[in-house]
Length: 437
Image 1: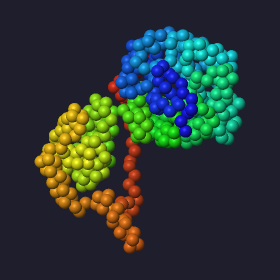
Image 2: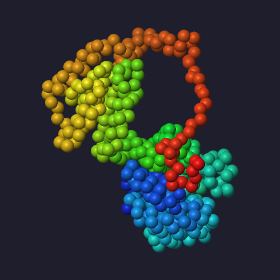
Image 3: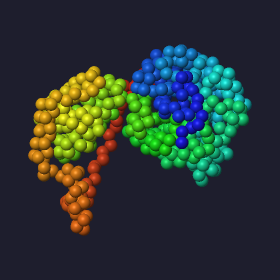
Image 4: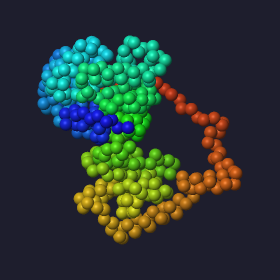
């Protein structure tokens, strides 16, 4: 259920049927203009529609004047506790103010910000986190956390409406994924305003991306949510943007750049697919076109599993096949797979269509047939499914023996502790308020 109301953050529409907007937050000290602007340009290049900056001090509010002027995308000022910083952020030209009415100092101070925001035509994001609910809701939070989150958000909505300020979006965030899903579903039924989605303090690039994908993906698939921010424990803010875009692309809500399809690999793998996939993914970053590229680890299953892809490769020992739209393009030596793939992509994009050279396509078709014959005895997923179906019809069990190991127990990996040391490339401190020195 998309929100009925629409607001504008800078020139970006939020809600009311507009595309889901992607935002992130800078990791730098905001007053460090060089570092902050470098990160803003980086996230903008990665596809961020909006960027939020922390404003905990006077000098950060002062820096906003330059940041807003130089930023390629609208800037949101993140304010906590000190309402005067919100007033100064509006004066500095911030395109939106993030505010938690519960920690800003009471109705009068919220009203003061609302008046200035109205005069400047600046919208606000209001809302709550699970860790900062009003005190009078703490008992309800222990008994019914979802209801407590929604109650707090609705109270803030009613507060803003009583102040005759309706130019806002609302957020409910929790570290708990099921609670976040349930709370936002319930909130969407109660208010017409745009909803900002996020899993707060989600975790690392790995765990945080998964939790965000599950939580936000579920809500977006339901039609709930108008703008999203992925919260990851990484100093590379662009990684948050990349995850957000992958979620939107997976749900076919927005398109931006290529989509990579890659099989998970198995015991049939006959070439260095890890390296090939990594290289293809890296080279695809230079393309803006929403092309779909598939990488299959073997030729046993043919190209049927990725016949919908615009382009793809499938490999066998020493050789491989370039295909397009489910049809062979050409057979080539394995070491030329990636370069040839991109040659074909570039030619097709340049012409506006893919052209098949009859002789090369026929050679590729014949190669694929021969590979399939050579591997006819392999248990492909299709063959296993057929065997299972036949066995089920006969009332038999074809579970493979030995799956649990010789002693009948699953092998458990030995875990060893090892300290992880991150350098500047993986976790840069440049522009931040601390160093590792």
